[in-house]
Length: 405
Ligand code: PMP
Image (cartoon, rainbow, N blue to C red):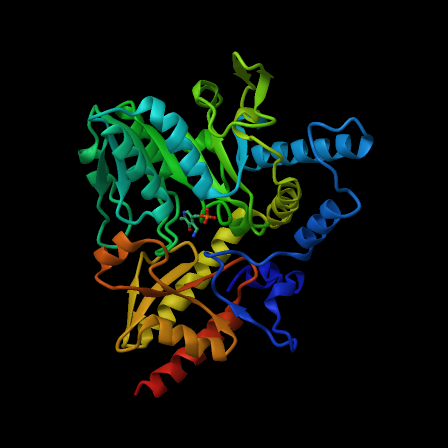
């Protein structure tokens, strides 16, 4: 497989070893990625010799920490092709980013009878915040169906758009199926009726070159922990003029310009949306994660994981008791079902073989309903995955087949 050898950087990831030093075949990167030593080191230094608060201290350590924190914002902006670092809001994760948009932009821009368009394959975090908003505002939710090969059906999306559609919110890459959205086409469609497009980029940010200008979306959300960074940090990107017009979300320190008991005025974005002491160490470690991924070339990562997914799909297809979900060109995420074996039983047997897969509904219950299964088994690749992981998975599947007869 071309490119695989150069991309397999298992040695950089201490989490990929069992306590006895044996390899751990980690195939749950779509849930959360293992961390390279560079990220662990960045976190250690930020919590140790460099630690201080940001934005407030008059002493030099705090001033340096503030520079490092804001340098991370600039690094994120460059990584995703944002026009300005002022368009980058640090949040706890994609879930928080989407809730922030729903509770600020949504509450002010969406009213009774307005429509929000989602798709069948969305993660719960791109469904529930909109349901909560719809309940609060009297808006309606429309659901775009999938094509036969499990992609968001853009033809159907076009037909579902109405002049009342205010927001289209879609996964850039599905966490269950690995389907990649033609995001630019979705943006053009949404904009044709004056709607905004929010992309849930949780699975795309670790796998694809991102360019906000080329995507032409209005909001983009992702989590640091899936991008080889720490938990507890994520990014909301939005166009500067949209952020400028958005009311604050949480109130507290750092998000204000001036507070009196009569009236408080708010800081401009992104500070307006970052109330309280931020996740300083996590933001700095996210910077290290982006440096690590960027040095490997996101386009090569994408090709590497697509190739692994294709290999796995071909191998699974040869086992006639396996049903495959998702498109052939999945972005490194393969969901499947084995006849007569519950995904949890498969996951448990694989665990005995030092192979970690995910078994369950993957926070996408409406998609499970659509596929007609309560759960799937999911193997998802990362930049450190290689054919040895596929071989271990297949050995475990064969053993499972023997056990279940
Ligand atoms: N959207 C997608 C597509 C995801 O895969 C996930 C994480 N599984 C989320 C949203 C939510 O991310 P987090 O839990 O980090 O907020």
